[in-house]
Length: 99
Image (cartoon, rainbow, N blue to C red):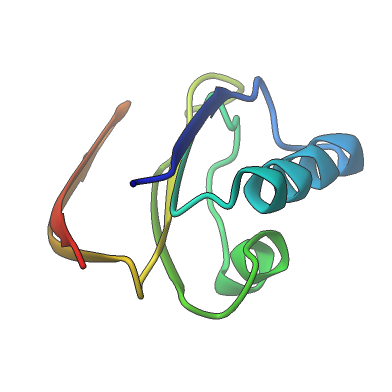
């Protein structure tokens, strides 16, 4: 069974939201997490590693423009292998296979 979790988070700028994302990942044992409306222009490896359960992750994002938009996808590399990533404004495409 695949565990895909999606959430329109409406801004990831607060500690409350970050803690809620961490709890969601752990409670749901997410293998892929899709977040919409992050309202962030960039993410670092360090930021994502604080959210994810272990170091078996990869991620891609489509940056927000001003205070609008922003997409983030994080996945468990031991469960899902990505073959293709296409990122554009307000659009993120991942093609891959479940292991």
